[in-house]
Image 1 (cartoon, rainbow, N blue to C red):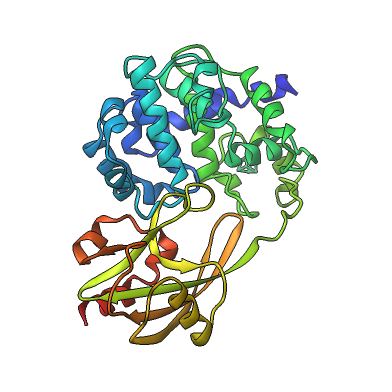
Image 2 (image 1 turned 90 degrees about the vertical axis):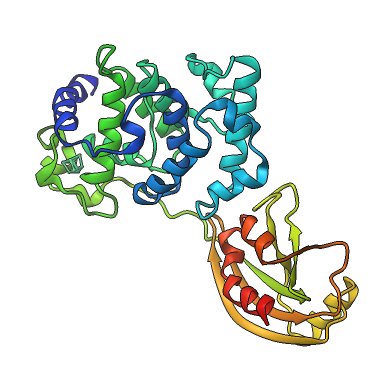
Length: 351
Ligand code: SF4
């Protein structure tokens, strides 16, 4: 298998040299830039990441700057990218790198793996792209490519598959000087040619001559993937509690979904107007007026929130909440789920 897989190395590198997209994080192989871009690109499209990456680099050009950045500023730079645990871990890791490695990411793969938020994929990407080491970066794109090239009947959700493909790739990595390009050529092929959902553009593929799925006219059959468990569904009631040009905000719990983020006041249950009034009374909000808001839905990786909401005019905002005016609200990085009620919040604030 390794012998035939070896055949893909040269055409892939040639194709990448000719077809690589010009992306800001490819301007150089500075480890910090490679690291930040790889974390941003998890769960997020390249087109979306470009603007965020450029703003982030301008505001926080190195590890030291990231390690010292106030959390609210950091969240603001990340606002809209979602999955905030990524940026929290990024900063935790930057603080370790600043304290223990003089502000330079360690070259050692095992040391990279010990940093918060850096798993096998990201460590492989940094080690190979920034430090020219023989470490593969196997993400969903690379899994798909290898499953098709080898016509592998194994289930893509099998956790052992990543390690096996990583070892297969590491056996065919090129000499120093081309390792970063090889890692990126696989990423690029998965992003632009060997597309998911039965839509690979095999006619443009530099390795079609070595691809078993293509040669057997079975690209639809690979990768093999058993369906994941259904997402968990949760009800959420959101309150836009306003008083004298201010709106009540609360912090999410320190653990779990959207941990530590500012949000509108909410509770994890479906409340109608009557039960909402009782909930508000119990939390010290004696509403003058309660107006129902349209239902909204937000889909996370493993959870779906079915949200309903109420605009609440109140004589005061209890101390348990933060009272934010419009400027303070704009400074908070509201998670996208809650930002779905932002138009109504601004309307209520201004009325
Ligand atoms: S030939 Fe088609 S299926 Fe095979 S690697 Fe290339 S794009 Fe993917």
